[in-house]
Amino acid sequence: MKTTVQTPSKTSKSTTINPYLNNDHDYIYSDLFDSQFGHKYNSDFLTDDFEKNMSYYYDIVLVFKQIYDVAVFVNVFVNLPHLYFLTRKELPTNLVYIIMIGICVSDLIHSAGRIAQLSMSWHIFYKKSLCMSVFPYFHVMTDIIAKCMQIMSRRCAGFLALFIAAFRAFSVTFPMSNAVNFLMKPESGLLIVIVVMAVCTGWSSMYYFSTIITKVTDCVGWQTPEWVPYRQDTKGKVELGIRVIDGYMALVVTALYLFVTGALVVALFKAKKLRKNLKSDK
Image (cartoon, rainbow, N blue to C red; front, side, top):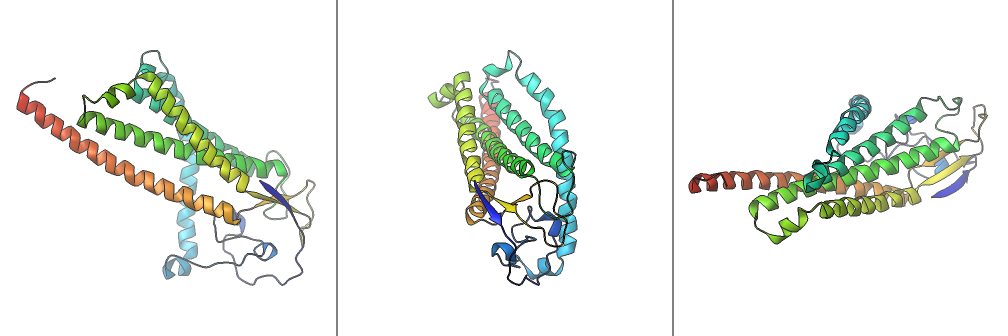
């Protein structure tokens, strides 16, 4: 993590109108203080339609974001009893249930991170400032740590879910394999969860160390807040690179999950057909 000091810029400010002034942390190409950080507003949209109807698409994104925030709280109430039942004495002896415990814990970590972010946005811990897009240091740090928690938990849950689907497909296709018998042991499941969580934690820590926190020394045109103002510069090259790679990882895991799930369905149909031919339920 890097901390810098922002000083008032003597250069002329950009005349480009930014439609997302209050949401500069959520969009790569938008930043209220573009000129002060030496970044130019980049209107590089996927299609011309996005540029012409920005406000329309922004409203859609805002609705999905609100749904996402509600789902975070629902996720807590669903996964707490889920975790309780999965940790009963009989279930943790099965590989699949051990992996499901890891997924459940990851989901709860994700919800905790997002709820921490939302609690900061409610301004219940400090007095809100008229100076836009600046926050106390603990607010910025809470946001960064919460993002790290979400990156870690998303990747961890995705990899563990992919492993369950792949293991089931493999065990149905090769039921007598020694690898299946080895992985069925509870120790194997616990080791897999620990290794995946450790790797995902290391990946999220790379985001933490790539962030840049800037101390704002002057809020031009606004009254200086009672606390020392800080903000996160979300346009650092390293941070943007990590975010792009993380997005591609999510797409690849999703595609592999669909592929493996399809292979599992095919394997189950073949196994069912084979049982009918043998006229046996074994």
